[in-house]
Length: 348
Length: 177
Image (cartoon, rainbow over all chains, first blue to last red; front, side):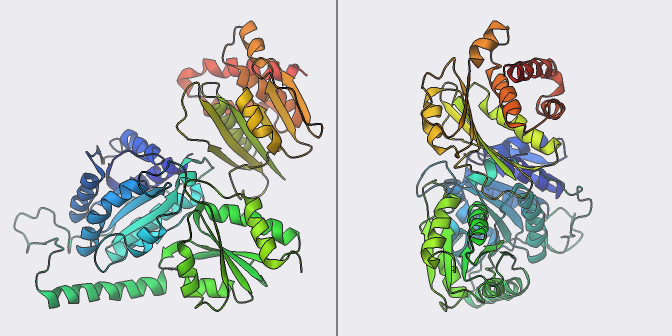
């Protein structure tokens, strides 16, 4: 199954009842799958007139307590930024998928990872975070969707899955969890019909009283602190005794893994650190991965964005080098291997 | 062991479908696999290619840079990929379409007039399956019963008649050796 289709099927099985989207390559198979399957599974699929409309439909649906999702690719996600900020400000859970392509502007339609800053640092205006998950296989796309819906509900916030064109387009074997029959109860805050049976629930992100808004934001940051403590996740591959640790996420991590495996076979002490959550960034995990490292090689399909988190997390104790391709060009294992070799001077 | 395959040709020749059948063969044989299409602004008559990896271990990069096996169904694809094939690799070309002569002596090079063979047997559009059949005999990658099972997975029941046609073409390719 294609990565994009797997994302869609997983969402349906998670009890996602509303999908609103606007087609864009390389994400379109996801919308197409939803168009075919959503109605049959008792949900709503709607192709909106624009990305902005789609994200605001998600906001509306999420306000009523149903599981809702939208998906797009880089330029489309930029258009959704305003709505995502409103959802964060209204404490609404939803899942947003970005199957990244080359940028800036309309860019290319080939895979890229140049939306890292946007996803992890500035997904819209205002003081807020979205949780950002970075799967690296079709199976992990499925797992990420399940986790994303659960965490969105648990912390009442938007969660983003940051994939890329390669993961969206590739086909791999995949197994799905059983469809969820029990979903979290949101009756204490959701704005759904009650025939005057209780006090109004109001979904709102406008607080004209500054101290009140400050208190709201601070409460949200208390939740963020818990997330940073409890929700980080990363894969450490061959990091024991590794003198050079390659840091990479998503599709690039697969390329890097091939390079690391080859380097180890050639006697170079290399390892791979692969964050599965980008916000919160796995600070503990990277420090564990790098405990014997003399050098970190950050590899991305961008001009270098995650590298700042790598430097911050390791407090610049170890030199961090960079190798990247961008604009839709995918690095090859041989290129990454050559960088590893250059930095280590070959086998020790 | 990992076998990396690139299939390339014109859009409309069934390049992506052939790759999908090979990927499903991997699934049927209990192997790890990946299938990655080129998804540029391609269309019928343009170029199309895909990367397929079949492995006993989890697959790293699904994008094949240096294939063990190349199937090239047009000249531009042949020229683009021939230099990337690993030494000792296997290259199959459709000589009905590809005029270029082989310039490498460190690979196994098989040229069969697949498009002509298909049309002479009234199976227009099955050149891809003929080439795959020959590739399977040359490489020993999968047995015919695995291919049959994969084909049944790739073709929807309402078009089941195509399973037989495709299998006939695969057999014809296999018998061309």
